[in-house]
Length: 371
Image 1 (cartoon, helix red, strand yellow):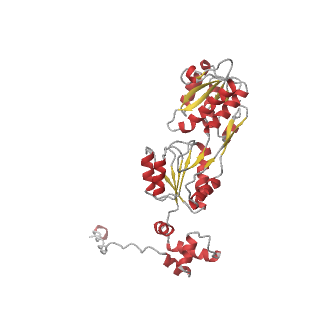
Image 2: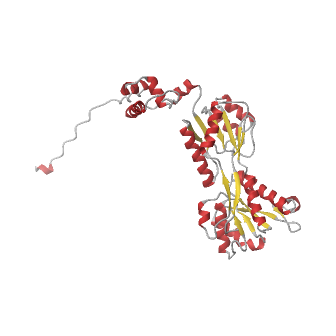
Image 3: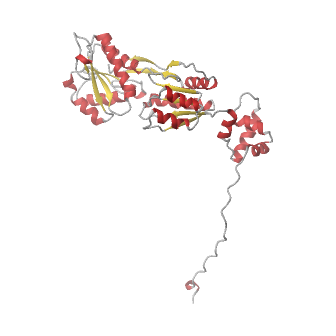
């Protein structure tokens, strides 16, 4: 029999082996031995303690030893020693908040991390105020920053504080007893936009109200602000005497008409197709993104901007300045993430039953070519 026809020898059986024991979890004592320092020094360095002076070479040795061993401080043990966690709970937004607010929230998270807080984003979609408060409390956060999409009550705030939250901060138009209020006055945005159009002679003004669920948190007060500006500047009759959703001009005053629109080319095109029948000569399009979408659709219908229709948005996005005509907008000034993080840190370090209200934004119309 030739060598090639021989059957190959079966492989030798692998040596039997039992389950491998997991490697021991490194401790702060291991880090201290490797770095040649005390356990207290390891704790000071890894917990970023500022009250104790430790040289930079020593800090570097401790960090290098911790990295070599794969040591990570135990959050629960740290919390027990401190009497509270360093978790700041930030419920995730249920709706697209746009580039302006996304940037603001990102800055806030970076600033809190620099202050040695751990930011935990919590998906709270579909939870009521009671359900959300109990779910958040399970994580024992030292602070909660509610974006206003879930309506909290004084009872919910008390639940969070009993679980160890030193500060509850709400962002929105309404303050909650027991919580610090960070107020974003969205009505001012709508008022500035409508006033800008009225001052330029526009008398039949449409206000885009997004059809997407959840955006009424922003769109409803912006619409209310536009209506109030029209009443103040244009002597408009109330909607109750003008028909549902329409503030009709009286005696040459300004009128506001509510225009639902989804954030899609199809919805914008459908609205633009019936624009001439609406008789509107100006529009506040909720924000710059909706304004750009609508402006393109109006131009596709042969309507001139601003000659036939003046268009203004809000948020002052860079891309609005690149359009032709350049987009007029309402510029919104928000505090820096560092500023808000400092407010949170002070509320945590100096907890008090006395709550504070902070106005977070200022708004100003910016005149460009589209109006």
